[in-house]
Length: 140
Image 1 (tube, rainbow, N blue to C red):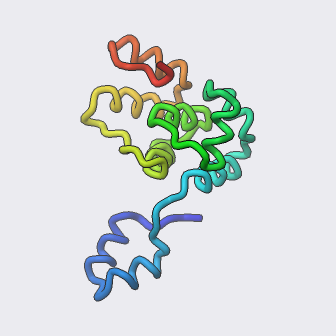
Image 2 (cartoon, rainbow, N blue to C red; image 1 turned 180 degrees about the vertical axis):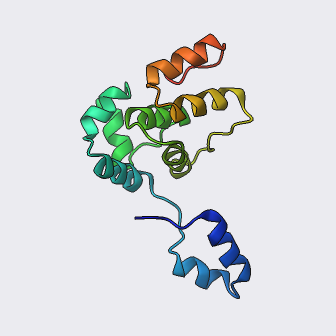
């Protein structure tokens, strides 16, 4: 499903007479983490146990994240994003759905993570880059 550009939505919102109707028309609501993770699995043809394993998560904890029984930390969500080879946009959506801040390029650690995601690096490679720059690793 192709989403409209943010700029286009903003223009429409600013010219709308009623924000409630705008929100209803575009079905704007908070993204549910378990639903979004399942959507990504389906779109990418991945299976949950393999993603959890590649993310380096305990299988029980990983299952609980996917069904919404546990609220994962930002790092755990990043681990899942790397395991699913997510784009930067997908990663930020995962973080927002999980109640965490998006990656921010003015933060040194986040900038390294953004670079690794955008270059298709693995979780291990991202951790190595972070370690080389004396930043907290994702799997720490």
